[in-house]
Length: 297
Image (cartoon, rainbow, N blue to C red):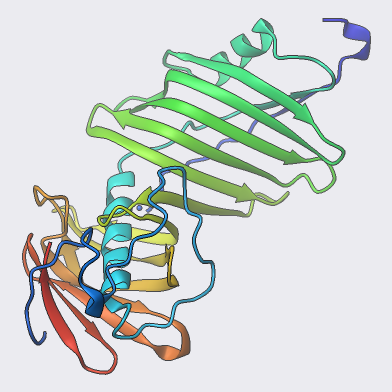
């Protein structure tokens, strides 16, 4: 590199990115993937694994979409519980250089700072625009953390940094695992302002194969795998709902569904519903107008 004209900015932050926290009437048997059940709106949309591309507006809960939104709530809560046991890289450096391609020196620097327990981090792309930098990193079996909390991440990180406001965000897509948990596919975004006030979101594929987004989630575990959770979940067709726990729920079913508990979900104009997990295979969906239906996964 020609040192006289080189401009390098290194932004290094520590981000603990464990997503924390991630009664009724007639019965029917219905697989959420099956779109033939029109009364409960088993519509499919956006089956891509690339991330959430659906509505950002608030949903209005009614009989036609209550089942879709109930599955969104159940999928989001299950995803957050799964993500609770993993963390993305603690420190991800963003290196931006004017008019130069990534170098082996940058690869080594990034690897040393991120993959403290082994593996490698490659600087794939450095792009300088008028008001921001975009940097893309590829992490291969990148291990980090300490003691019992060592994680391994394979995937890509896209870092955007604003020159004017010093705001930044990271989009992380890949697979993360630890000695105590199975591999988990993640698609996380962390957007922060200059004062490190951050918003976090996770995009994931739900029980019905659709792509959802979960934000503002908090989850607690009583130590016996009984959970409470609250947060916002985006359904690609209907928009977002706010989810709370009325009865703590359990996980561990072989099919990945909650086995007991009740979640409430609220939409626009004070509309709401709930999903109650009767067993690993049966659940009940009810709406604010008093209707309730039982289904099997």
